[in-house]
Length: 96
Image (tube, helix red, strand yellow):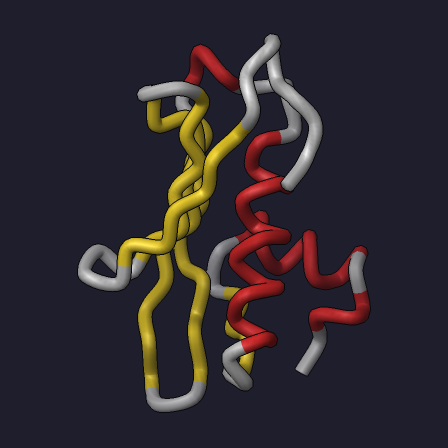
């Protein structure tokens, strides 16, 4: 998936029930991107990195994974979250 963070391989899980892509380091929930589904639009509305894991690029890792999965599923990307909006503006391949 990506490089080790502090010696641990990040693991990303998609939880449909919570409408969330969650990044774990070991057993710790380190970062996540929440979304709301509206038909074929997956609107990312909240991205969080746990304070103890900030500064390691985890938000970018989980958002990139979430956007890749969204595109792979043929869904459009919404950017209500300011972090996701900035990420998409810097990575034009994710623009609808």
